Length: 113
Length: 115
Image (cartoon, rainbow over all chains, first blue to last red; front, side):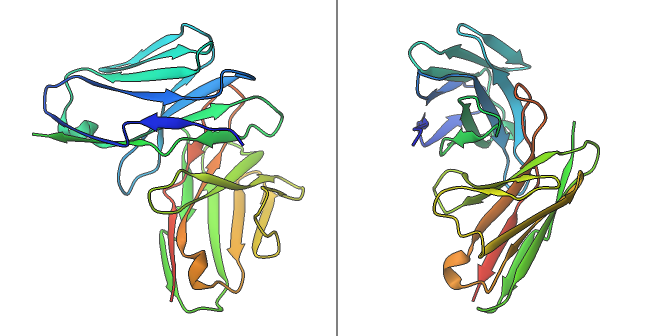
């Protein structure tokens, strides 16, 4: 059973604060790490798919880094806004023709105005 | 981006009823679709992988006779919860995949409540 852990479980920040959270995953048999943003009553939206150790990806105020050797990825949000409030999910893919993802429980971010 | 339409969004029904959930890919061909279930405060758990034109692959512990999956076309997969019981109450969500390095495209999910 693959173990994908996310921390913290939930986070409250003030508008304008920068924040970050962690996803840890098995360091062996790594193929890809996905990040999704899931707002209430909507479908999860893909943020990043990361495949290479040392990868750093950016989308607006959100960025992510990847360390496959030690098995972790960080997601950063700069200058949080209330519309950033959502659950952020990471998912680990270890390869295989079935393309199966193993998800963490997510980090629930609430940005207070 | 790719859109996956999932219906219904909410079902409340009596114990013993069978419930069908549909998942359609609107602007891409989903040769593979995934069905997940999520219990409160838990992660998305893969139930089964649905391949167009062939039998679904179920995860360990998921009863294939209980959760019937049909993927008859490249754009439609259905999950039928047969003779649903209160313990089947959960959030069910589907996704379609692109290639290995592409993200999955999710539906909005279905909240199933069995009374």
